[in-house]
Length: 185
Image 1 (cartoon, rainbow, N blue to C red):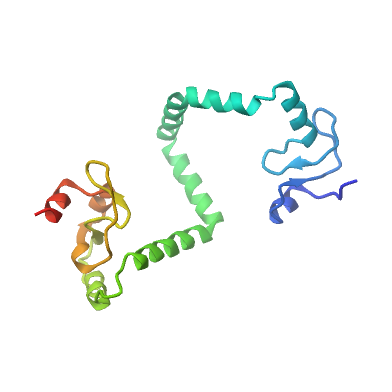
Image 2 (cartoon, one colour):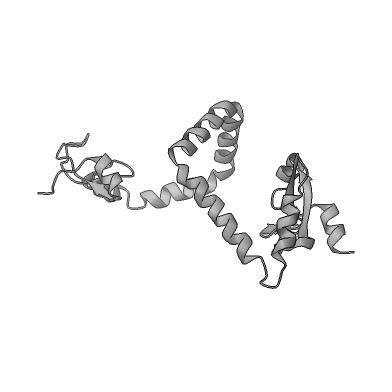
């Protein structure tokens, strides 16, 4: 007999399954998956009825992908405040996520900075950034051109520019037409 362990304890220990000793809705007493709460015996039963169950779901998703995306987009558009609240709650529960994202961004910039570049010039560009502006890469470190081609810019002084926050958000990791003209003169 399996040792009893709750779903919460299994999650804390990063286990794939847990065992409560209680029967599932079909009366099986077996281990359950942490991710779905489904018992092993139910999983085997469903697989025996329709061995292509996963394949059927996968095919349905492929056939109805656009419809599903539109449905999800409509719901997000209708519930913007709720989405913002859910996002804030998630970030509050997962404070390490933002730290990891910031650390990864630093790693990306460090890898895109050649060893021969003058670090003091880069620091002065950031230090002299006007109020209400942000420092932006003309050619993104990891981004795309106007035509959609991938580009990899360097973290060097001549690839930095000042943009307003709104311009920088709108630009994201893409080059703008005027950036293309700056680069290909």
